[in-house]
Image 1 (cartoon, rainbow, N blue to C red):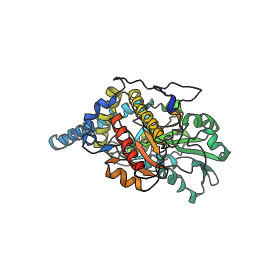
Image 2: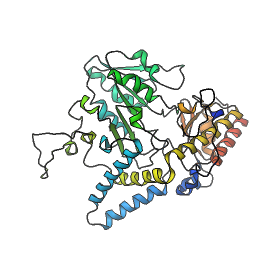
Image 3: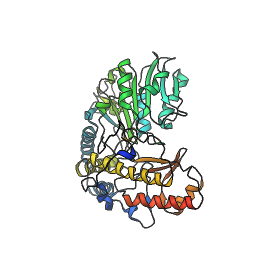
Image 4: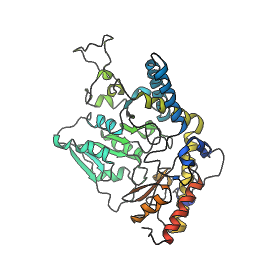
Length: 412
């Protein structure tokens, strides 16, 4: 884990050392995000929707200029799509042809969920707090005879590893589904431990990476997942309407041979005449799940932002910066007597997403009046950072919370 000094076997907020260094201060790119420079606004809501940055805006402007001025720009956009697939493969450490562009996370998850081979009476296992876009994809298969088992997380630590799922797994378990980072708590689950335990038992592991991509390095080969899906509108900052599905090459032959949705993009022997043939041959890679027409404008934006992240910012630098902000937040909350929900161990939580135990409904109006942009969930107030955030943003939040406490709004 970047920038961590481990003491007594744990990397906790209070014993994690982050050196102050311009090398890691990616907030120098703050000028790329006009919204966060508005007077009276402190934007701490990246996990809901990051504000548009100028890298994305420029890519969209270029796309629009090409669309209105060039006679035939689509082939160029398609070439950029393949270049973007290569960039994603580099970031995730996977072969580019194991990636398919989708409409969003939900579509990617459902494509895999409906490709898993099972018979009535088989089961899948989820956390009872799993994101609804993931959970309902499995629950929709109940009417066909699939049993959906949910781990009761009441009273448990906000972290899931193989031992969390083990009590509900048996010889009829076909898949485990989970988010690598939980949207409502910021927990960073033990995906590698889960895959190491259950993949050898022929149990698929499907992971939602939506709150994970774009904020820290990811190595999908090392994690060992069967499949992963994510939207590109959170940490990857692209406009909505674009997602990605990864399927491990060794997993593809174990799935149903016919994709749940079939169009021309799935066909490897598509005739140049575009006449359909009874001789249907699907791509031998994850490309069989892709449509011919995807959001090309979103792909152009994603290409620009991925280039910015990988070449200019650096994923390790970004993670270091986000965790430094999180540590400052946690230490300041400790002074105020406000609990940060979840583990204190840095390897069990996302670098950018922190939940404050501020449940009283008056906090919503208090933050809004002060220009603090955060989300409110069942566990408390979600504070989420982007590359553009600074320690000054954290301290603005701290001062507003302090005023709320003085005014009598409780810290619980």
